[in-house]
Image: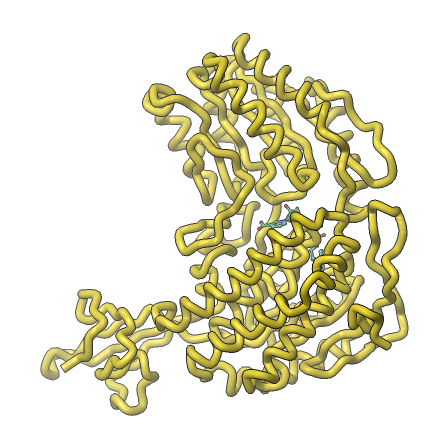
Length: 530
Ligand code: NAP
């Protein structure tokens, strides 16, 4: 039975609510150290089969819905979510222990994502239409465009219950592309997930979308997620979460008889390189103490863009900077983490770092209540860091490791030793950027987003954003998970050779009534073809 928020604890298999099994799990409120009031029924492989069969059937018609119809669907989801009002925000806060202010910002971002995909597909430009005409019969007429790949499975991360979850960027982009979506709901925000899923189902009904265009399977075991990835009806996977989880699902998909792509957005240490010019200037240094404190501790450090590494050449100015940063971070109140598992992994990860050779802790450490974590700054020399792979991975939470390099050569070697990252930041004055061109090139080769004089946290949602990076930041560095260009993950090219005009998809015909931008015989044009 639904409670006052409308939560039943069941899965949506298409538009029908189903239990799956009688096995029950709970989400958790870290602030009160107790279960949330809801019981969730664990989905099972029968529900996986049903949801996949429905999605396969829905794909037949959904893939050829008009761009305007799909845009109306996406806007209706945003409107329905907005219509949930404060109920959605209260449930979000209960399950995540994040603040109401954060809930509002994340909802606004999620609605913006849905509406920007609606606007983007209405232009038709996502089809990337390319036309080479026969030039009076001298060669074949070839016309190429992007089309949807098929039903997509989405796994969301616990740290973004809205923006990277049920109706988050992966779901919005896949549906915008014309692909049905099955979400494996995150067990730690299963109620938030069910409320958002109900919005999607209502929007699908209201805009005449086929049953099965969306399902939301509520599960806390790996069994359901693995069965979804292995199901023959599934054409691709969107994952946001840990490196361990993303890699496991990537390997699983590769072992299928018919392998499918897994676009996994995983962890990152987001190195921030400080140059001498910035550190030596007292005013600039003080400004960066404040900025780095905020970036490290915001959201209790639970962002994939959290600055986990600070890299600089040894100097008195660096010592002053690190000391001031540690003191300021010591003054930041400990914050409740998302759930006990994240809290325990953070403490374990920080402890593992502290016990590595040459690592010293500069902040006062670990004493907190319940599941609250305080921010931590550790330090290690460039040589100890370079030679120790145990220090190169993400510790998810408010922790930054300062890597103090002996000289510029060592700084370059440290940057060269880094794995792929979502972001890399460079803090300096103009001269620093001129004299450190090699460091800049090295960092550029390792990141998806190179930031000059800015912190890595705070991801703008727009068409130019690159939220991705070389492995292990993601499994496919060619794509972004944020912004309208993330739709490319769910599209594949198809070329039509000598196809009669009236059999072509609308965006490839000679007439171009919507003025879609197309590359015609090597020139961009939104005009008709004579
Ligand atoms: P997580 O533990 O990896 O969980 C993500 C989802 O994947 C959950 O639904 C989880 O199911 C499932 N899963 C994990 N391992 C699996 C496996 N082996 N088989 C099947 N399913 C599996 O991640 P999280 O703790 O929720 O999120 C925190 C992490 O996400 C951090 O590392 C953070 O950096 C990363 N993140 C990355 C981005 C980005 O854009 N790059 C954005 C946000 C967060 P269960 O919960 O049932 O285990």
